Length: 423
Image 1 (cartoon, rainbow, N blue to C red):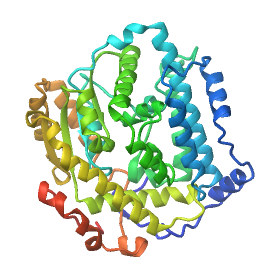
Image 2 (cartoon, one colour):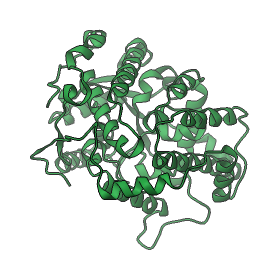
Image 3 (cartoon, rainbow, N blue to C red):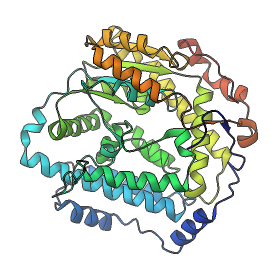
Image 4 (cartoon, rainbow, N blue to C red):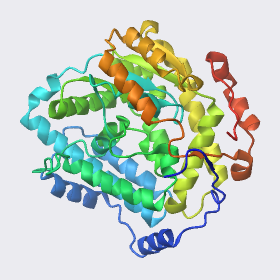
């Protein structure tokens, strides 16, 4: 674990010096090319699920094909990255098959109410993860831990082990530990340990309908395809998965979160009309800087070349699209059920903000919840795994001022403080 008292400098971010272990992993993977043929992926998923019914959505095959084709178009991926994507697609299809089978056996699942969720909406790296993990400490809340987001449907015959932990937890922990050993600084950027609360759009991708693939590969074709989908339909599918998870692990009020919701506020509110939404806000340049730094670091194993100019151009545009849609559509969330939270407020002022959020939701904030909130804050100070020192000009050849010009509309709309890009 990094020392939180000292900043972390990544002096090889865009020209990585690989360790012997990293080189060995890449060399082995390149010697074993990955096949992304869809029929083989579906066959493998069906064998794991013990089921072969993908449901009655005739468009799923088209979306799955577009998903995989976008990856095939990315010629810069290493075989390590292609293996990761293939494993992910097999997992998504397997879970979809298992969900169809579960709903066939227990049709009453689709009558389970998903009422009055709290939903955190904001840019990547804007405090959404901190806020949703904090709210999830309330024992009255149902949330989506990372292990469950990756494997929402249990495999046939799998249950808790001798330690009482779900078999899916142990599988995801093994993957997390392996990633931590090969990319140790990821925890300082976004630590996806098994119990960490994750985004429900991972569930949406059982329907091949989210923006998540953009975080795994360079897929502008998928971005455009995803943006053309009828998301009300797909958000209803995501709600169905939440109903299944409620059936499997308990009927509590959900807390959800995703940056993707920023550009899907219409479908979000159509699906969860009684939701209360917490919008997080942060200097967009800090968001872009943090995002492309994390992507560049991850790309040392995922790509043959880092291409910092591409990262700047793509993710500046992506954040701009997300923020533009959020500003345009925020009135779709009733004023009495939305709260705006600036990033600079999420550092010692969390409890009053939670009081405001719970009041807007008409939810009880119990003494037990307050105690657990404080315990979480005490155990998870900012920079727990170390703080990165950023260098936009040095790593990416661009200044904060050059990027900030595109986001004046956002500063006009919200209380957002300009941040020191090197902090």
